[in-house]
Length: 547
Ligand SMILES: [Zn+2]
View (cartoon, rainbow, N blue to C red):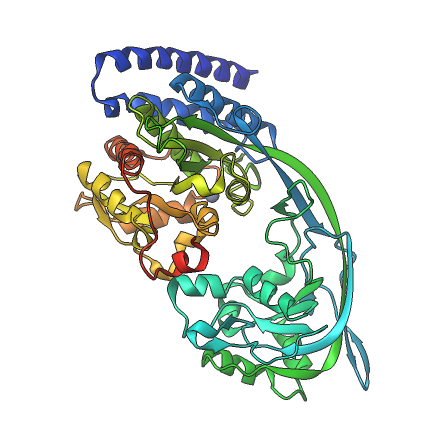
């Protein structure tokens, strides 16, 4: 009841705010003056309130958040841009391994060996099928990567027809940066294996994986919780490779035993991948894998607002602004009695910034049109953005760029900004100009080895060939007394994806306001340019996915 009252008073407060908006709109010439601390705060206060229960996709709290964003779009004067008014419904399928079902057997001339589930091996569920059962010869394929254009292949000339591959996660050190993100992706590898006729996969433990995800932990958590994918009307699921009908991860101890007497031992295989050497070879035995999977369907919307461009020639081209609206919901691990992951910074903040950038842009619309998309199910694996990028509510070819915001942190005074992906396209120059106009210095990605660009929603657009940037704040504080990286590390360790990512976190409003203004400027920068954005000449992503 108390919560309900709080919501009611917030709604009143917000409608009071939008009246002020109209007043400001007529009294100020500069649309950027519409961006205020009060407005940003009012969005955070609503979206990060306990009443929204952490905005988990498919849950009531997310539905409330989606309705709120649609009302904000309407108040700003946007048009509905979804497939059902403001909404684009995304159908999500959760899949969970039936815990009693997994079976893995090794077949040799000397007899069969049945392995122990969660002792020798773990499995996840199948995204679509309720039951899988396969048997095949096992072929060792190193990383299982195929990148001949970069002088590396574990698959060239290897017969995989009807086979099960034994592989290590990751990719060779000889392939670096962005390229490694592509070639080490298990989905991309699986497509290569499937194209060669493989039916299953067994993942082996590298020494590196053992450090970050020890077997003791994997044996408990792997496949224990439901995962999700989106499903389209034809029943296709995202990142699904139907040909690969069985997969398992096996313990380092069992891998050593399994490869005994094979042409390559487990430790030899580990040495080979560390030296970026392909050593693919049939192992001389067969394996069967079987499992059952439990499925459930839920629906959760992306919320889409349209700002129509002013130039008759260019209004049919669209910039997509995006920020994920969902968060992780209610945790099973309460902290000090609080179980609600409010997601104030992650990503009520990005959503608030997008709404306020939209307000400023709507006061002086650029020549191109803009879609503002509050995305669902980012926290379940970039699902809302991947669905939108596959099935946008406008022609895919007419989308010229994506500008994404995800969890910008304003924990201290700052004068640095980052635009992840700036180095790949002409959007870099636009972001640079916008940042400079607000007194920020645009600094390069400070942790390129983390390949962060591939880890938020903008990457869904990149994979459809659309130029994209993800705007973030820098690590350094402009206050010499503040150790910026230490403050951020503390946030990531103690508050990120925890109940304390709420309105008790500090917010440096000066930085937040400048950042929001820079965000809006990017819309004018892209939207008023004579030419649509382009991938840089010879860019890896542009060549891989671009037109
Ligand atoms: Zn998150």
